[in-house]
Length: 204
Ligand SMILES: Cc1cc2nc3c(=O)[nH]c(=O)nc-3n(C[C@H](O)[C@H](O)[C@H](O)COP(=O)(O)O)c2cc1C
Image 1 (cartoon, helix red, strand yellow):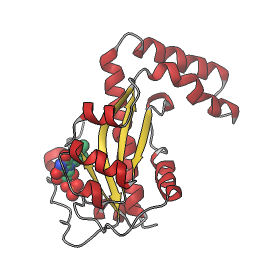
Image 2 (cartoon, rainbow, N blue to C red):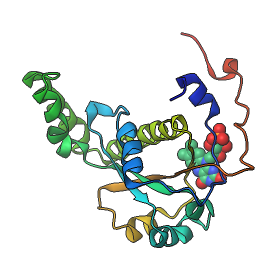
Image 3 (tube, rainbow, N blue to C red):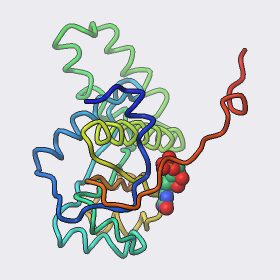
């Protein structure tokens, strides 16, 4: 593992992958274990991941990702989903924190009640939360991959309805992002320059 600043600074969106270098299902699960350390509102963990890594599944995804070759060349393309109705699954998501003594019963009930009040009749907020949580997890996944010597590429260039259909996503699972992960081939761009901090930071 490298220093976190180095990991952040070395991450790029890598277009070119070594197609010969695959990842085991165990290695993919380790990446997702790290991704799920991302924060989410109420610790709802309202995300799901589909690891598209077999030849057949990659070929199925290719046209839905507008024929971007990295979908075939990368070891995996994760379909990073955010899930709607986070309040319904929240008790199950929080119970382990109660069981290990982090959350007391009053806090558990307070959070579940607050989440019900916020999300139950607010489809827009449910969708916002799904996108927020999936984006948090996707960023964590990219840094996890980078820290393990791999590269990644986030994509909005895909047919969301087609992907949901082709990979049998549930009605409450929103495909927020495709994310290729694998080992780099030559000719990837370096990280592009960023705006000066003074352009984006104000102090209050
Ligand atoms: C949510 C998201 C979606 C993106 N979708 C695409 C895409 O569909 N096609 C593409 O070529 N690049 C896509 N990119 C990559 C961006 O162009 C890239 O992150 C940006 O140019 C900065 O470069 P860097 O990631 O190498 O630092 C996406 C990036 C993000 C964060």
